[in-house]
Length: 145
Ligand SMILES: [Zn+2]
Image (cartoon, rainbow, N blue to C red; front, side):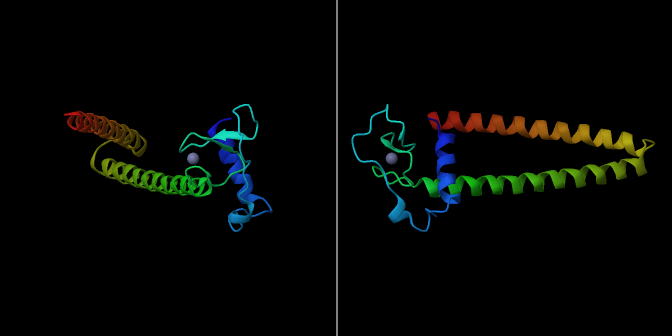
């Protein structure tokens, strides 16, 4: 039993005809004790680690809300994809704008200018990642003291 299986189970419940979000109180059934690790319906709660029913949408031990967690993960993924799209868009605009500038100011043709811009942006991006890693390492060292 892994986390993905549980997310899948939760998704099934959200998408299913029973509509667990609306009727969570009624449908949030879990198998009462004893739940042994050999029980195929038992999974470990990701929050408290206790054995609970895989059908539970809320952990009866610690109150961890799996549906809310699933929704939050979905929302986070959606936002990250929006950010990624924005970065790709900016990178494309900068590449093309830069290539046009280089073409008009040097003897390079547009294709050569494009390649030059891609190399330049690649170096900048790599440098930025390198700097972020250095900064995080520095922060982590500072926290240890
Ligand atoms: Zn729990």
